[in-house]
Length: 72
Image (cartoon, one colour):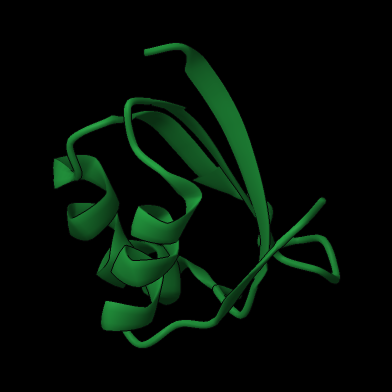
């Protein structure tokens, strides 16, 4: 599988939010690296992945109680 970079507009807006989603993203198979720009107005979550789909990432985010919208 090829490496892919996904970006999502989210409502992950502070360190506490990042801390609550961190174990879920860290343990997800196929996510190599991730980060959230909590300072920007769109709260962009960037994920570098290998072998995970956009739908699977969205599912993880929604299960943790956050909203995410893919950026085309």
